[in-house]
Amino acid sequence: MTPDTPAPPSPQDFRQLHRLDVRWAEVDAQGVVFNAHYLMYFDTALSAYWRAMGVSLADLRRALGGLFYLRRAEVDYRQAARLDDQLAIGLRCRHIGRSSLSLQGAIFRQDTLLAQAALVQVWSGLEFPARAQPVPELLRELVADFDSGKEVLTLRLGDWDALGAAAGFVRQAVFVQEQGISPELEWDDADAISLHAVVFNRLGDAVATGRLLPDGHIGRLAVRRESRGSGVGQRLVQTLMQRAQQAGHAEALVNAQTRAAAFYRRLGFTERGEGFMDAGIPHIEMRCALTSL
Image (cartoon, rainbow, N blue to C red):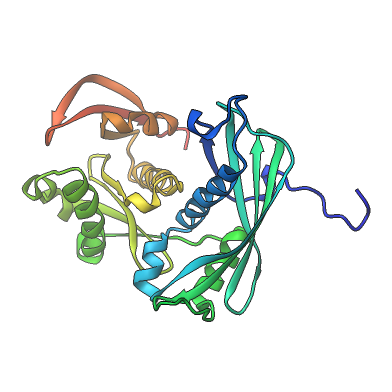
C-alpha cells in the first residue's frame, strides 16, 4: 500500500453494522457465495442503515415526496464469503452532492474484509421517468449527523395528555394491527397514571413507545416494524428503568411477551414464576434489580 492509498476499512469505521448468515441458496457447489449476491447484501444493509436513523424508505416517500434510486454500484471482491459465514455489512456516506449520496460499503467476516462497494444513490421525485432532484436539507442533516455519531432520535417523557396521541399511534400499529389485540384490551385506565416515553425520528414520526406505572412496572413497549433492530427499544427500557430507580423502586418489573424474553434478559431481567396468557399471547413476569444502574 502506497502512502496515497487509503487504508482498507474495518468494522470500527461504521456506526451501524447489519448482520446476516450466508444461506444455502446463495452459494455454488463449492459453498462460495455467487458474486451477484454481494449487491443484495449491500442493498439489505442499506435498508438497515436508514432504519438505524429511525426512518424507512417508505417514510421518506410519504413525508418528502421522493425516493432514492441506485445510479451506480461498484464492488471490489477481496475474499470469498462461504456457506454459514456470519457476515457484518457496514455503510457510511462519503459525500453528499446536489442530488446524490455517495456511500462506502464493506462486508466483514469478523475483522476480515471480504468485499468493498461504492454506491451512488440519486434522489428523485415520484414521477416517471425519474428525474434527479436536490437532496432535501432534512436528509442531508440526518445522514451527516448519523455518520458523525450524533443522536438522530429524540426521546420525550410525559403524561398521557402530552404524549398519548403519539404513543397511541405506535401501539395501534404494533399491538392492534400487527398482533391482532383487541382495542378494548389495549387501552386501559393505567395510561392516565403512567409516565410515557416516546421516541421520534427527524420526520416528527413516533417510532417507539413504552410506559412506567407508579408501582415500577414497565409496559406497553412497542417499536414500529421499520425501526426494530436499531437499538431504540433498549434505549426506551433503560430510560424507564432509570426513572423507576429515581422514583425509589428497588426493581423494575415487566410482563414480557415470551418471544421478547431474550431481549429483556440482555438488559438484566430474569424470569419469575410461571408463564401466563394475556390478550391471547404467552407472557412471563420478569424483574431486574435497579441497584446497579
